[in-house]
Image 1 (cartoon, helix red, strand yellow):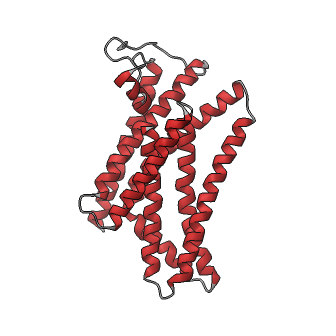
Image 2: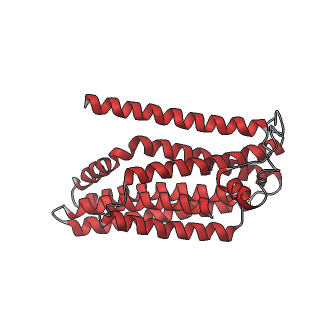
Image 3: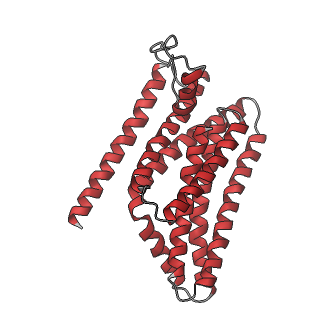
Length: 278
């Protein structure tokens, strides 16, 4: 549930902030009414595209059985882990200039004559919302492989509500919300969720004998913090904790975090150099 809440909160918040940026830009235009109509049409189209992806994934799953189904589910879990890593790195790099870039795209769209401007704004909104929605579908599908559906949907609903409350607070200019700090914290939480998906995928590949376990277990902490109940179970679901991990799992976690932190450090250095020279 907590994984779904955090994922849906972050993705929905990004989509809501995109819509907010576009709406604030539209209000400043000479004829905002048709552009606003185009924006909401684009939002609806983006949601429709995300739902279509969800239905396609469900339909694809129904076509598989046995080993093929297991392999399809494994692919979705690993895709979700990779997508979380990609999303975190992309937002780490582009988050600072996202408002400026969205306004630039909207201005280019509005420069077209007549209905072209409306369609252009609709396309900007549709692509932004569809991207966030598609990522959410893949994440929830991957998380759904590891637990029951009811807590997943409950967490998703709570995440959407929390995103709405956060977006409202941002729109109201809430001083207690530092968006930079908020997004940095969410990056860390998303990487933890990505770790849990990666661990689930690596465990499954070891079970299928696609990967060697190397040393199994590398250590045994079951007597201190078992992963089948209590706090250990929560950590297992949330961050991929294993009381008796195989060496391959530990190597995968180290590689995942090592690459993420290395890329973030490089992006931060590049941004600092750009600010000095800019």
